[in-house]
Amino acid sequence: MQAALRDASRDTDKILILAVSKRQPVAAIEAAFLAGQTHFGENYVQEARAKLMALESLPIVWHFIGQLQANKSREVAERFQWVHTLDRTRIARRLNDQRPYGAPPLDVCIQVNLAGEPGKGGVHPDELEDLARYVGKFPRLRLRGLMALPPAAVDPAPFFAELRSLRNRLDTVGIPMDTLSMGMSADLEQAVNAGSTIVRIGTAIFGPRPTGPHPAPGDVK
Image 1 (cartoon, rainbow, N blue to C red):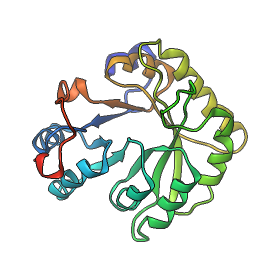
Image 2: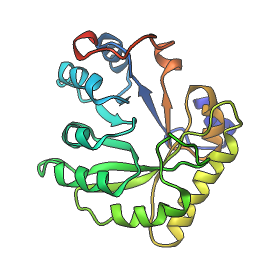
Image 3: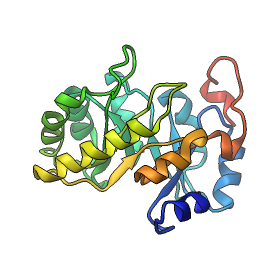
Protein backbone atom coordinates (compact mmCIF):
# COMPACT_ATOMS: atom_id res chain seq x y z
CA MET A 1 0.00 0.00 0.00
CA GLN A 2 2.82 2.40 0.83
CA ALA A 3 4.47 1.61 -2.50
CA ALA A 4 1.20 2.26 -4.35
CA LEU A 5 0.79 5.58 -2.58
CA ARG A 6 4.33 6.64 -3.45
CA ASP A 7 3.80 5.68 -7.10
CA ALA A 8 0.63 7.79 -7.13
CA SER A 9 2.40 10.70 -5.37
CA ARG A 10 -0.10 10.56 -2.53
CA ASP A 11 0.37 11.06 1.21
CA THR A 12 0.57 7.82 3.14
CA ASP A 13 -2.02 8.98 5.69
CA LYS A 14 -4.77 9.61 3.13
CA ILE A 15 -6.05 6.05 2.80
CA LEU A 16 -7.62 3.44 5.07
CA ILE A 17 -7.05 -0.29 4.80
CA LEU A 18 -10.29 -2.10 5.57
CA ALA A 19 -9.63 -5.73 6.49
CA VAL A 20 -12.38 -7.87 4.98
CA SER A 21 -12.94 -10.51 7.63
CA LYS A 22 -15.89 -12.45 6.23
CA ARG A 23 -15.52 -16.21 6.78
CA GLN A 24 -12.54 -15.55 9.04
CA PRO A 25 -12.57 -16.78 12.65
CA VAL A 26 -12.47 -14.52 15.67
CA ALA A 27 -8.87 -15.54 16.40
CA ALA A 28 -7.69 -14.23 13.02
CA ILE A 29 -9.46 -10.91 13.51
CA GLU A 30 -8.02 -10.54 17.00
CA ALA A 31 -4.52 -11.28 15.70
CA ALA A 32 -4.89 -8.64 12.99
CA PHE A 33 -6.13 -6.14 15.56
CA LEU A 34 -3.16 -6.82 17.83
CA ALA A 35 -0.90 -6.20 14.82
CA GLY A 36 -2.40 -2.72 14.43
CA GLN A 37 -5.45 -3.19 12.17
CA THR A 38 -8.54 -1.45 13.60
CA HIS A 39 -11.10 -1.36 10.75
CA PHE A 40 -12.83 -4.60 9.70
CA GLY A 41 -15.50 -5.29 7.10
CA GLU A 42 -18.22 -7.94 7.24
CA ASN A 43 -20.63 -9.01 4.49
CA TYR A 44 -23.24 -11.06 6.34
CA VAL A 45 -25.15 -9.91 9.40
CA GLN A 46 -25.72 -13.38 10.84
CA GLU A 47 -22.05 -14.32 10.53
CA ALA A 48 -20.90 -10.99 11.94
CA ARG A 49 -23.12 -11.18 15.00
CA ALA A 50 -20.99 -13.64 16.96
CA LYS A 51 -17.77 -11.88 15.97
CA LEU A 52 -18.97 -8.50 17.19
CA MET A 53 -20.09 -10.04 20.47
CA ALA A 54 -16.85 -11.96 20.99
CA LEU A 55 -14.70 -8.91 20.25
CA GLU A 56 -16.85 -6.21 21.85
CA SER A 57 -14.12 -5.36 24.37
CA LEU A 58 -11.80 -4.25 21.55
CA PRO A 59 -12.16 -0.77 19.99
CA ILE A 60 -12.75 -2.17 16.51
CA VAL A 61 -14.48 -0.06 13.87
CA TRP A 62 -16.94 -2.31 12.04
CA HIS A 63 -17.94 -1.69 8.42
CA PHE A 64 -20.86 -3.46 6.77
CA ILE A 65 -19.92 -4.12 3.14
CA GLY A 66 -22.51 -6.66 1.98
CA GLN A 67 -25.95 -6.28 0.45
CA LEU A 68 -28.27 -5.22 3.23
CA GLN A 69 -31.75 -6.69 3.51
CA ALA A 70 -34.44 -4.61 5.14
CA ASN A 71 -35.07 -7.22 7.84
CA LYS A 72 -31.41 -7.04 8.91
CA SER A 73 -31.09 -3.25 8.97
CA ARG A 74 -31.73 -2.79 12.69
CA GLU A 75 -28.75 -4.87 13.75
CA VAL A 76 -26.48 -3.02 11.33
CA ALA A 77 -27.78 0.36 12.47
CA GLU A 78 -27.21 -0.55 16.11
CA ARG A 79 -23.83 -2.31 15.95
CA PHE A 80 -21.83 -1.08 12.96
CA GLN A 81 -20.10 2.26 12.46
CA TRP A 82 -20.07 2.23 8.64
CA VAL A 83 -22.27 0.96 5.80
CA HIS A 84 -20.73 0.90 2.32
CA THR A 85 -23.62 -0.52 0.30
CA LEU A 86 -26.54 1.86 0.70
CA ASP A 87 -28.50 1.90 -2.56
CA ARG A 88 -32.19 2.35 -1.70
CA THR A 89 -34.30 5.03 -0.06
CA ARG A 90 -36.07 2.42 2.06
CA ILE A 91 -32.82 1.20 3.58
CA ALA A 92 -31.66 4.75 4.24
CA ARG A 93 -34.85 5.54 6.11
CA ARG A 94 -34.66 2.35 8.17
CA LEU A 95 -31.00 2.86 9.10
CA ASN A 96 -31.73 6.41 10.23
CA ASP A 97 -34.79 5.44 12.26
CA GLN A 98 -33.04 2.45 13.86
CA ARG A 99 -29.74 4.16 14.70
CA PRO A 100 -29.53 4.56 18.51
CA TYR A 101 -29.76 8.17 19.62
CA GLY A 102 -26.83 7.73 21.98
CA ALA A 103 -24.57 6.77 19.07
CA PRO A 104 -22.90 9.10 16.57
CA PRO A 105 -24.42 9.27 13.08
CA LEU A 106 -23.85 6.17 10.98
CA ASP A 107 -21.22 6.77 8.28
CA VAL A 108 -22.58 5.63 4.93
CA CYS A 109 -21.40 5.26 1.34
CA ILE A 110 -23.75 4.91 -1.59
CA GLN A 111 -22.99 1.91 -3.77
CA VAL A 112 -23.07 2.66 -7.50
CA ASN A 113 -23.65 -0.05 -10.11
CA LEU A 114 -21.35 1.40 -12.76
CA ALA A 115 -21.74 -1.35 -15.35
CA GLY A 116 -25.47 -1.93 -14.94
CA GLU A 117 -24.88 -5.54 -13.94
CA PRO A 118 -28.11 -7.38 -13.12
CA GLY A 119 -28.15 -8.97 -9.71
CA LYS A 120 -25.47 -6.66 -8.33
CA GLY A 121 -26.38 -4.04 -5.78
CA GLY A 122 -25.96 -0.37 -6.40
CA VAL A 123 -27.86 2.61 -7.68
CA HIS A 124 -27.72 3.60 -11.36
CA PRO A 125 -25.44 6.62 -11.91
CA ASP A 126 -28.37 8.63 -13.27
CA GLU A 127 -30.23 8.15 -9.97
CA LEU A 128 -27.25 8.86 -7.73
CA GLU A 129 -27.82 12.56 -7.10
CA ASP A 130 -31.43 12.07 -6.05
CA LEU A 131 -30.47 9.32 -3.60
CA ALA A 132 -27.58 11.38 -2.22
CA ARG A 133 -29.87 14.33 -1.54
CA TYR A 134 -32.38 12.01 0.13
CA VAL A 135 -29.73 10.45 2.39
CA GLY A 136 -28.38 13.87 3.30
CA LYS A 137 -31.67 14.82 4.95
CA PHE A 138 -31.39 12.22 7.72
CA PRO A 139 -29.83 13.39 11.01
CA ARG A 140 -28.71 9.90 12.08
CA LEU A 141 -26.79 9.25 8.84
CA ARG A 142 -23.60 10.92 7.63
CA LEU A 143 -23.05 10.60 3.90
CA ARG A 144 -19.33 10.06 3.45
CA GLY A 145 -18.89 8.94 -0.15
CA LEU A 146 -19.34 6.36 -2.88
CA MET A 147 -18.51 2.68 -3.27
CA ALA A 148 -18.31 0.45 -6.34
CA LEU A 149 -17.41 -3.10 -7.36
CA PRO A 150 -16.14 -3.17 -10.97
CA PRO A 151 -17.12 -6.17 -13.10
CA ALA A 152 -14.91 -9.20 -12.69
CA ALA A 153 -12.16 -10.04 -15.19
CA VAL A 154 -11.96 -6.55 -16.70
CA ASP A 155 -9.63 -3.60 -16.25
CA PRO A 156 -11.01 -1.83 -13.17
CA ALA A 157 -9.22 1.47 -13.82
CA PRO A 158 -11.97 3.07 -16.00
CA PHE A 159 -14.60 2.21 -13.39
CA PHE A 160 -12.51 3.67 -10.59
CA ALA A 161 -12.07 6.84 -12.63
CA GLU A 162 -15.81 7.02 -13.25
CA LEU A 163 -16.61 6.71 -9.55
CA ARG A 164 -14.18 9.52 -8.77
CA SER A 165 -15.80 11.63 -11.49
CA LEU A 166 -19.24 11.01 -10.01
CA ARG A 167 -18.05 12.12 -6.59
CA ASN A 168 -16.52 15.27 -8.08
CA ARG A 169 -19.74 16.03 -9.94
CA LEU A 170 -21.75 15.76 -6.74
CA ASP A 171 -19.34 18.16 -5.08
CA THR A 172 -20.10 20.77 -7.75
CA VAL A 173 -23.84 20.58 -6.98
CA GLY A 174 -23.41 21.03 -3.25
CA ILE A 175 -23.06 17.42 -2.08
CA PRO A 176 -19.49 17.17 -0.76
CA MET A 177 -18.00 13.78 0.09
CA ASP A 178 -14.59 12.70 1.36
CA THR A 179 -14.64 8.95 0.70
CA LEU A 180 -14.14 6.63 -2.26
CA SER A 181 -14.47 2.99 -1.19
CA MET A 182 -12.92 1.09 -4.09
CA GLY A 183 -10.23 -1.48 -4.67
CA MET A 184 -9.41 -4.90 -3.27
CA SER A 185 -6.34 -7.13 -2.92
CA ALA A 186 -5.94 -7.73 -6.66
CA ASP A 187 -6.38 -4.16 -7.85
CA LEU A 188 -5.31 -1.95 -4.97
CA GLU A 189 -2.63 -0.19 -7.07
CA GLN A 190 -5.17 0.97 -9.67
CA ALA A 191 -7.57 2.03 -6.93
CA VAL A 192 -4.93 4.04 -5.11
CA ASN A 193 -3.87 5.70 -8.33
CA ALA A 194 -7.51 6.66 -8.99
CA GLY A 195 -7.90 8.30 -5.59
CA SER A 196 -9.40 5.60 -3.39
CA THR A 197 -9.58 6.49 0.30
CA ILE A 198 -10.74 3.05 1.56
CA VAL A 199 -9.36 -0.15 0.05
CA ARG A 200 -11.07 -3.40 1.05
CA ILE A 201 -8.38 -6.04 1.60
CA GLY A 202 -9.16 -9.64 2.52
CA THR A 203 -6.94 -12.24 0.86
CA ALA A 204 -3.74 -10.19 1.14
CA ILE A 205 -4.23 -9.98 4.92
CA PHE A 206 -5.86 -13.26 5.91
CA GLY A 207 -4.97 -15.53 3.00
CA PRO A 208 -7.53 -17.46 0.90
CA ARG A 209 -11.00 -17.56 2.38
CA PRO A 210 -12.34 -20.89 3.61
CA THR A 211 -14.65 -22.49 1.08
CA GLY A 212 -18.03 -24.10 1.61
CA PRO A 213 -21.21 -22.75 3.23
CA HIS A 214 -21.09 -19.54 5.19
CA PRO A 215 -20.30 -20.32 8.83
CA ALA A 216 -23.09 -20.31 11.34
CA PRO A 217 -22.74 -17.88 14.26
CA GLY A 218 -21.42 -20.61 16.54
CA ASP A 219 -18.69 -21.60 14.07
CA VAL A 220 -16.76 -18.33 13.84
CA LYS A 221 -14.84 -18.59 17.10
